[in-house]
Length: 468
Image (cartoon, rainbow, N blue to C red; front, side, top):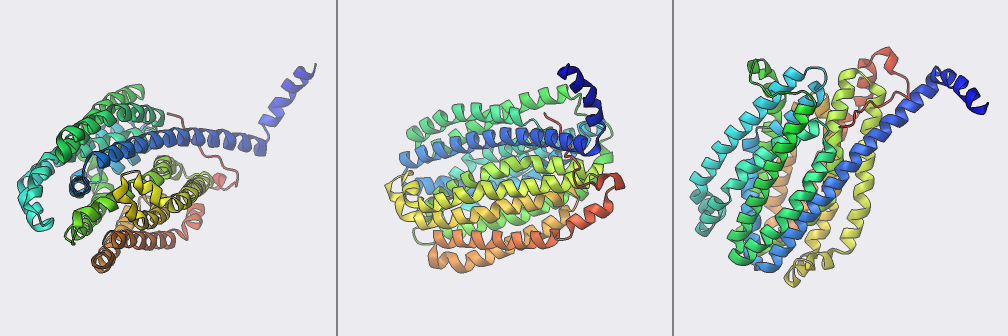
């Protein structure tokens, strides 16, 4: 009898608006937490594997050799955003927006993004090989770096391809697949990098990183193909000219952000290398920066759900769900960053010594870079709503301000404090960028209420998220 009464009463509760909205909200939040959990797992695995591989390299190589690997990676990283054309974030946003409602357009954007990425990546790789002597001699102050730059050129092409592949997987919300890929990449990359670094020094470490990235691209391609088949998305060039506006309105500002920030980052690293004992200082900065990456990668990886989720909610006019998702994303980023940052700052000396005893004196560099993780995370979290609302040019302007602040601060601080000065300049630049982002978003909730349909104004509006 009690079960019968319960069955008779359930339809009444189903028709109750507040109860129905609460249940929908709880279900949606559970889906959001599930995706965040998979992103968290992939972040921990990927960054832990990368950190372990570099720790092994640091112990196998001399301080100067490790600094050489670091500046070579920085140089390749400068070309990466130029070659990427902003296509990774473009693929994420538009696959999230059209994967269900317009699969043909999603397929066109995917085909266009990947093809352009391969073409631009190959072009920039050739440019890196061609201008390696000038970069080594004039940019880094040492002609001996020419050969390592040429050896690392494969990293450039592969990093562009991997970036677009990952952007597509994020847009399809295949977070569990990304987590599994991280496991395999970690298992396979660590022994390869360690073995080649032990046998061939800095050149072997670069070769090991290249082989590991090649394996990542292969696995990404297999998984992406399967996800597209599952969602009935077929990459095609038919009607690709219709997507020119996508390149101008979204890819172009993302590209401009990359070509503004990346060269400035490389210029500041080159400035450090040119100082007395520059390669050793670069080694200290690079080791400390690995821990900063570890601190920021978890909240930033979890926040990868933000752009596709906010894009879908904004397109649907669900202002209540949009605000809830934005608050959840920013709140998680802050809570997931501050406690580890404080712990890392307090343990900065023993953490630096994990790379080797000679790294122990660089603990102040780690302390400052650990603190800078907080504005770095907020920079990503607060930038997501701008991209979801098609305000990419606003984001580009803020990135330009970040780059100028970083360059001017480094130009003043690096000659005085060397690696510590570069870390301080980094913290100042990202803090200023966060302030500008906060100012640009102050009126965002009011705008969302004005744009939203009347039925979406209820404070309990659910966040509609689909599981991958």
